[in-house]
Image 1 (cartoon, rainbow, N blue to C red):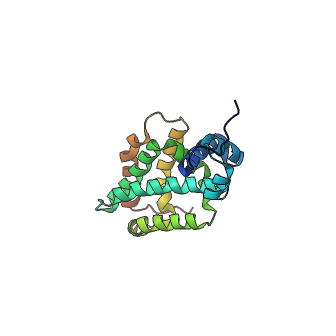
Image 2 (image 1 turned 90 degrees about the horizontal axis):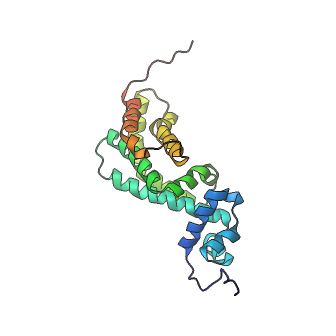
Image 3 (image 1 turned 180 degrees about the vertical axis):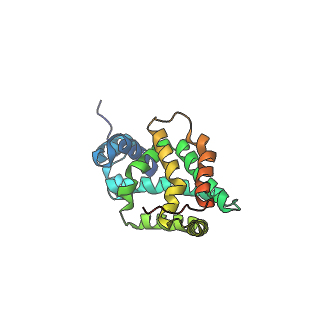
Length: 206
């Protein structure tokens, strides 16, 4: 019996392509994954993949935007109820760790490919940055002011707030941490807040 062609009797479904690409990219990397294998797994034609996403890299970009937008929506819901800078820090950390727990495949893909994909300047990625800036801008400006009052370089703000949480999330995804990352959210939030709430010690220049 002849094999059915991926062109198909299967209805055109861009989400099925994204799901297949996510699995392929996590297994083989963007460069190692084959667009033919992705389409075969999705039951889609290569023409359909190029029609919806333009290229294999366009498919990877769409996955990145899709994952970051999902995280953004969860974070926006959390930030609606915050009433203090400390609550902002807590929401940023808890939302990140919970999202990673709930979406490990997407998180693994984003961590592995964010540097490469962020270098692209497509309309979708620029729009994504604008959405993140619109959401976080007012909150981060207040935290930046607090950092400046404590003589902390503004470049250190996000590494101090989220660096340990990102490291924990990556280690959990690699299997190096057994407990769910959100178990540590309160402790990480407390430490992050202390970095902004405690005056910076004088720098020893000897």
